Amino acid sequence: EIKVRQAILNLSPIQQECLILMMDQELSMDQISTIVGIPVNTVKSHIHRAKESLKEILSPVLEDL
Image (cartoon, rainbow, N blue to C red):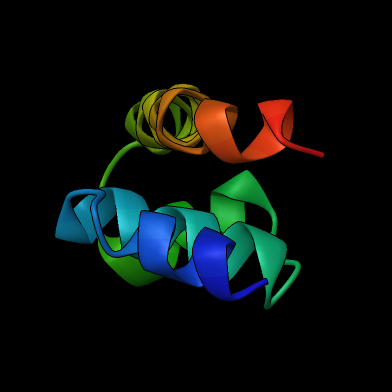
């Protein structure tokens, strides 16, 4: 979990916020959109990019498992 948290810190602030609201707070895309003040499709884009970045950042760690 520590590696995941560290990897999240490498994301842009908006990607971090959207991802954390979705994963930790279990909020819907609509709720995140309202909180962050951006359109739902933009929230979806940020979350998608965040997940892709995390896969790239964490791939060396996952290969070692």
